[in-house]
Image 1: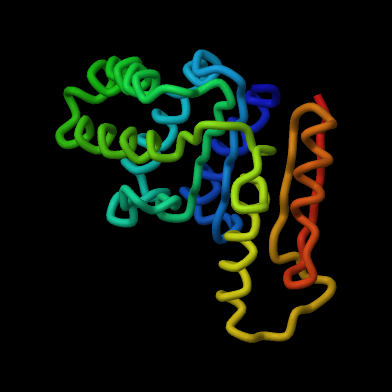
Image 2: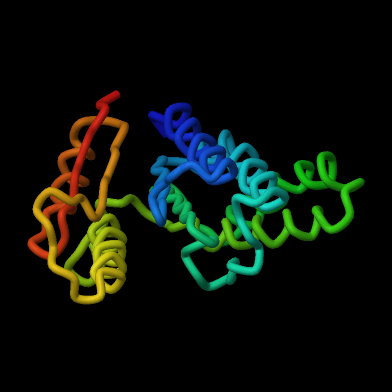
Length: 200
């Protein structure tokens, strides 16, 4: 839950730059970690509204939104909730975001349906557990970063890796202990990965 304000600023800035055709990374992954569902509710509607508004402009394209895909066009958002243990809790989360698109988008043709689709996609990005929990001999953050690294390698199409070119950049904000775990997960011999941290 810490660092939410700064990460939200990065998300808004990335979408603003894309809107104005200013260079941004080809893909961006935003990962939020919190203990309880109530903490996620603090930012849920803000994130949903940012994505819906971006789709109504040129920054995001709903044609690239697939329910089972982790990417919405060029953006991924993933939520790790360590205290999330019941499906009923996620249903309550859906209900809690209902007022957003009913209030803000009901008079804009088609926008309420877009908000609903984006919200349903976001629901699939809510993961029960912390990023440090092990599954199949790797923790969640290792699995996520390994997928990002593999995507970067595929897009290089066999090109020579240059030591002065960064393929993946990871920016972390939060408590130092978790930061060490994230940094360790960035270590690789396949792609050039840069890590930076702002402990809070």
